[in-house]
Length: 77
Length: 425
Image (cartoon, rainbow over all chains, first blue to last red; front, side, top):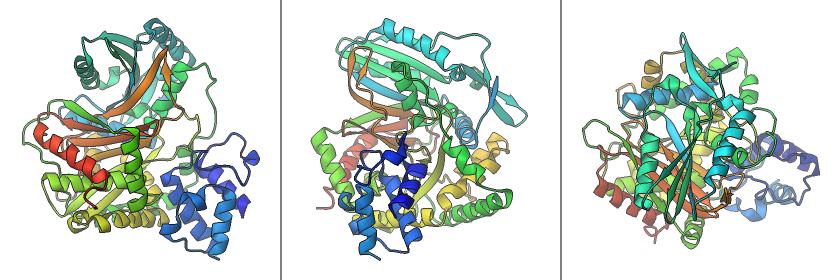
């Protein structure tokens, strides 16, 4: 799951010179993920993984890293 | 060397035509850095000369061939990219900044990128004025970065070209009709406009509101609470809709606000030039605007529905088709509803923190920054939101002869109160 998220984030939303080196605990907000990017990411996740992510759960704790996003998705599967 | 304009560049050129048609100087924008001392002007002049040799693609003029436009390289290196001014105090300094954004010149002789330094006893303003068809606001930030550093220009995919290259002819036709239907639906709600006087437009003025770090934190917390992590830009739009409604405006059935969606990847240092944007609309009915609790979730849901249905990109093929029209006709279609009413209640831009960050300019520390942009009349009002070290700045740009100063003061006060959530309490 992390790989698919990583590809989407680094191909579409944020530029990292070597995305391969970006770990699951790397800070996506620090890396430049902004509010419009978060919106696109959430919609991508909902479509790709067939989950509905409640708006009130869209907060740094769930978005900050790839690992946290993966856990968040798992909780809604 | 000739370089064609991309679809989004052409869109901003159409707006240049509309702005000039309104009686203003053209589609000029500026990034203005306020410095706490006077920088080394000789160093800046040298860097500007070096910049034009490192990036000759900015040493161009706009030319027209039939209905198409392109950038034509100047035959010689123009070194007059840097201009220095002196002002007796900050107020006079701001007047000079106003002169720079209002300086009119024929479209085919505009230098697309120029740097100005305004020295004052208490500090300086350093500004980049750019002609919008050359780049978007994020590109302007990259220009300042490269002016001040020796870093090699980065190369990488051009987000806008990559996106549009994915679409075949029939896909574009389908998207274009979807976008047209979307706009037709929006036009069923007539747009409220700022309270403007029925006189000819004269010049752009601006009023800048800075919030300190603590108040900015409070505002961002309100934005997070009411519009969520995804809705920061929408929070500012919604608050201005409400402030306009409370200040008294030409009230119709709702508010409609176009805003750019930048397709650049965040943190990418490329491409330097070209507008990499599509545009979207935020629209709300008056009854939604009157109810804060209803407004922000409604704007957020609207944005989600737009992205989910692909309408965020669908406007690009529509812009591409428009670029083959004469500028007058393109402008009329973009600005007006079929009933001939102005579609946009105000112009809006949110760029967040400059990236890469500029902390010092030729030995002088940057204390804050703001942006400027010419607007059409109507709506005669634009609000540009930026942040520097977390501190939020609102730059209200307005047509002086049409917007009453007292009314604007009341609008900015109401806007501050809306942003801080005082009306929600």
